[in-house]
Length: 535
Image 1 (cartoon, helix red, strand yellow):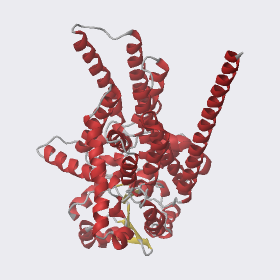
Image 2 (cartoon, one colour):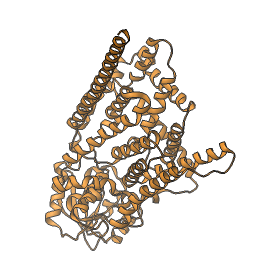
Image 3 (cartoon, rainbow, N blue to C red):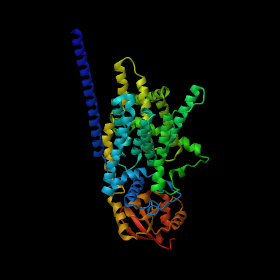
Image 4 (cartoon, rainbow, N blue to C red):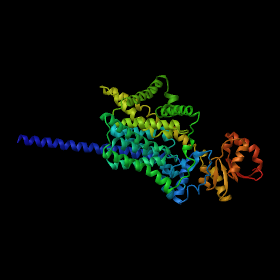
């Protein structure tokens, strides 16, 4: 009887424990879902439709438009390829992101407000990817804090509305890292998903090929390690071979199918054309590495972006406190790397070194947005190092984590005040500003469909006017005119803001403006017809 009563009590305790566990599970994920939903609305609420003059967004939207309208990427392109400026050619804009944007264009057309919202969603996906990637090792709440750090970091938050593939690319890379590091490597389904994500990442940015190579290298190194450990030549087991084969084939099939079969891309004009292994190679690489280090630092030294902190709180004692944060993070990151314990962490370090090396070698990719896939991996090692620094005293551990997040909290002021002030001023300088759209509309209404233009920003010009155009290099007046003759330019559109800062164009206009007919102008733009006498 006593035994029976004891069994009943034990059963009730187990049932209560299971109920509590289930309740905690539901409550925890409900909190995460609420935070994630609120974050998404917050990101979208702060978006702006105005894009910059870099032209990348126009290249991607143009290709999305061509997909929807069934046009040829080469024959129907409005941009005339200039070999001296390879980064504007179609291969510099892989098809992954345009395919992602194509349904948006099919439904809403050329509405940059909608495209901006879509890119805010990709930043949110980047945060989701960070959460998924970090949760297996650091738990739900640390991963959630890191995801918020990603999405609300001023350097990533401010350009969130720009139509660029970097956040989507980072999300795809994180999915690959998560599956390869923390899911079973003996299941072909995981290999299929991992290969698909890697192929899409490669299709989204040219340097996405890197993660494919790093995974293949890691598998080879692991097999070499097994051979050394066994002190004899051994072959990988059947499931490991199957995993490697499925991953590699799928990862390579995606870009080949899209770029070589469905949409044939021209051979010249990719980002690879910018790599020059000349006498200045190592000098340039060293300068790029220094710039890259400064860029990564900016993620963690937010006080430099906060005039409010500098003007009111940054007195001497607080300065030392703020400087302690980066030191603590640096120590944590160093400890995390030094104390690598398993294959997953060795792979992450290999990925970090490989990606960093590519960013050092490749020109023009040391900016904030290009380093997005690196940040969660850096955070991984920082968090691992901080976790290693745990002591027996709970209050000291709490102080440590509070110091780490002290850099994150002041970012809210910058987001709520400084960022919105910048965004409010973007309209006047954006391509969508009325003075620019007036020029685009005049060109559409008053020039032949087959007309060829010389334009400072040909991708943007072609997107809004549907006219062919090319970009010229800054050279002497005679060399500029020779380039215009080569491309058979009939018209030129001059942005007066560009003219104010482009000295080579100023010299050109002094010499050749008399040979051009001024057709139309407003406060921002002038459109000329190039006379035969000028050529």
